[in-house]
Amino acid sequence: MQPEVKIYTTRNGTQYALFAQPEIISDEIRRSQYWNIYNLEVADIILSESSGKRVIDVGSGLGSFTIPLAIKYLQQHIFEAFEPVPAINEQLNTNVLLNRLDNVRCHRIGVADKNEVVDHAIFDLAAVNHGAFSFLIDSYTNRNIPIPNEVDVYELRTLDDYRFGNVGLIKVTVSGMELEVLRGAKTIIENNQTPPLMIECWSDEWYKERKEAMIEIIKECGYKQVLLRRNFIFAFNDINLFKKVEQRINEQLPGSRVVFK
Image 1 (cartoon, rainbow, N blue to C red):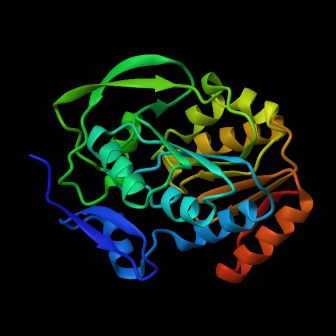
Image 2: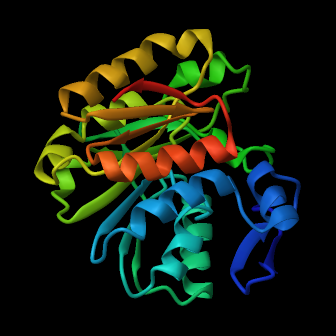
Image 3: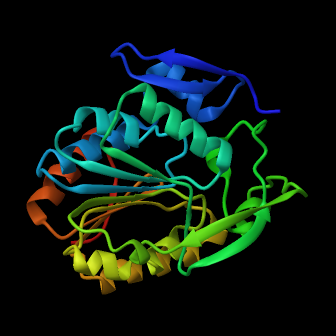
């Protein structure tokens, strides 16, 4: 049986269907109205510079990134939200409907570096971090997260397979699978003239090689400015936009590290 769900309305009127039980992302939304306000502010800077773009949110969860941005840019940008866990995808769809967003399309697909159908462990909705789901088993074992014995069938596809146009931002938070997502997105990045990237990248020792490989791919794709802030890589090919983001990030978190520019 799925956990109880309650509708929560933020101070600015945004509605979320949230599981009533304790859960990291939901608890933060209930407490501060947003999840990861820093990344939302960075995305806001990027999206305010253009119109008619497509925003790709890989690992969207309940919509904590897509929902507030899609509300603000309802008449300006289209959002493609990818969330493969069935119950969380339903939660995402519910939040889109609650906020009457016709500029969001939800995909129950896992994004990777090849197209395939896989048997993979289900995700325990009783867990306190619904963002911990991953198709990378190392992500579970290296973070001491129990792997459920029960499995489900999931469809994996590359971003390249979608052939999206007018992409203005790609955000990736997939609990360790970021490298595979990037490998499967080289063509879409090239065809869209290197749109800004926001990619989760942990500082764990086991993840070090994966992060280095991601940075190499970003270089190969032609990005000229790359910045590390906390657990995220930000990549740009527009020096003016990069400077605006860099200034805002340094205001939020002094000591952010520029990889190259």
